[in-house]
Length: 138
Length: 138
DNA sequence: TCCACTGGTTACCTGGAGGGAACCGCGATG
DNA sequence: CATCGCGGTTCCCTCCAGGTAACCAGTGGA
Image (cartoon, rainbow over all chains, first blue to last red; front, side, top):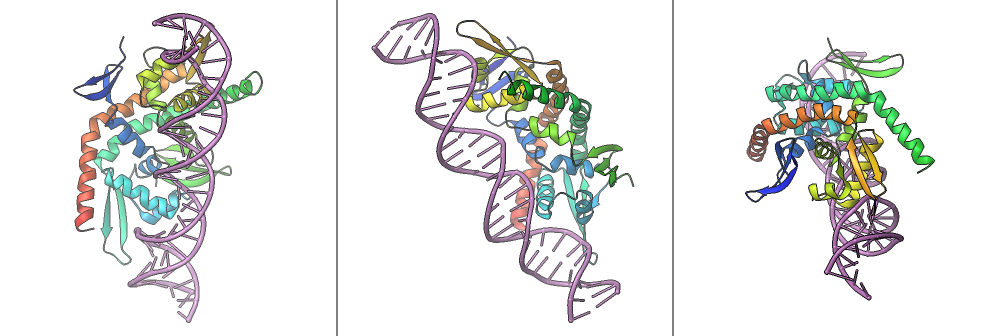
């Protein structure tokens, strides 16, 4: 059996696919929880091909509220995905630019984006099929 | 400018990286919101190398509550990532098995998992650096 | 004089994700 | 007779992500 839920040196660990995954201090969840926010991955994609200013991002993603824009940018900055630079012009302009870490995260994120676009129709189909049989035979 | 926030045939669309992303009915968010749940991606990984039964999964992922286990499995089944098969034994045993769609989703998910493990240390470092400077200079 | 734009902060509120615990029928086991 | 494991369902509660709106200082333009 390849699957092991055990303790290695007192730490609870799952071994899946031959890869150890810690449950107590899971790096995967630690990362996924943050980029899993409503706007985070979209923000990374928005900054993919060049830095943007605050109000530029605001116009680019019209659905985001000012509060969530600030918060999302702060979160991404805190995790080191982007840098915030203030230029002392009048009025001061603030530039957000992806770091190398941010750019490298884009690779797996794009993988998921492409998969989503490729399989969206299939999923919608599966959903309506499930809902239909759920309604009749239960 | 590569970035366009516009309307194509009345639909609000972002063009990022040369790829059109719908905002109104976004396939990416539609997928990411579902696999972004707390247990969903872990569940896919747990079923990666073979089907498992309900209580087998329960023991495998001890932290999940019975309620969330059922709900997560239903969600994944609804989206077509896995199939639920009841064997009329006594007591009836229920098997959960990934579909081809589920397996194919594992590819990009693994990409993210690997990235997370590779860059976890860097991120934690960035976080504590941010928190430290936030404390002093603000 | 009044408004708009810059880049935010703050207070308030709500919906829903997720946790905990009890309960279910059935059969096997002690 | 009681308890365990199977595979759930149901109710209740808490917490927080995220939305709305008001407000801020400073400057430029009509």
